[in-house]
Image (cartoon, rainbow, N blue to C red):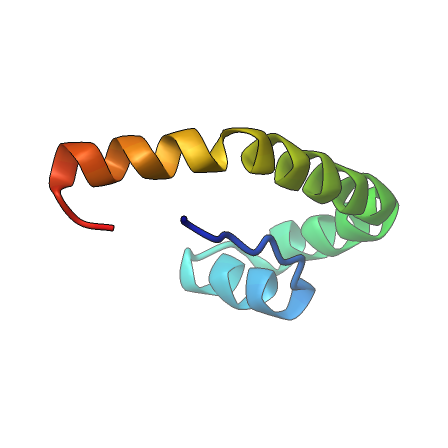
Length: 70
């Protein structure tokens, strides 16, 4: 069975934004949106995890059957 862990990590996201070359202005916009969207991100993470849990067993069996690896 495959396991996924969905993480909200503002610090990591900002590091990646800088690595992708976002400007200071764009990073400020990201930080503001992060603040206003955090509760929605948390809810979405929970819902996405529930969706994954519903298909995880079937998906894992399919991957094992197709690739021969568990």
